[in-house]
Image 1 (cartoon, helix red, strand yellow):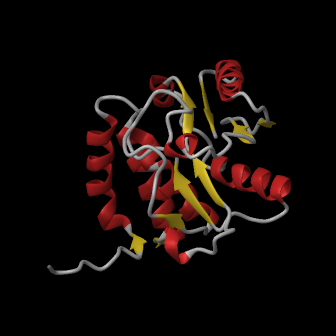
Image 2 (spheres, rainbow, N blue to C red; image 1 turned 90 degrees about the vertical axis):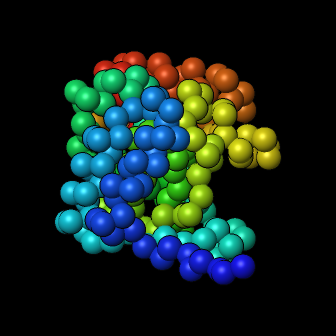
Length: 193
């Protein structure tokens, strides 16, 4: 059996096939893949290709930051964000954990959330882990593989398109998700986590 070399970066030529895959895994949900594609194209044109890392290449105690948008996907057609959401989230994580993330990772690969982490990785200069938490798009934060493994959902860092940011910490994941959705509603229907 022939072995395939792992992808080491994402450049602009790879974005349309990635967007097609994200659309398929979104199964008609997960937000506008077109908006995510445009944002990722712009970020890579401005900041260069995104480096891809394998989880096995990271230290066992490396901090990997799952990230996504949360709220009403159709709102993303009207609220495009300012592009710095990923940078604000990295700053919140760094301040809370007293160390920077080693890599970003899509919380889910379906829909726009498969592309936003590419945008944020390009803009922050952080690598993107070749992994995701769901294998497709799902409607709930708790529907991730990490939940099955007992990994805490919080702290949950949240920012919106206006630069408002907060951190939620709670041991009950359902409560944390309800609070995050309330913040999304107060922010116009969409936030980044």
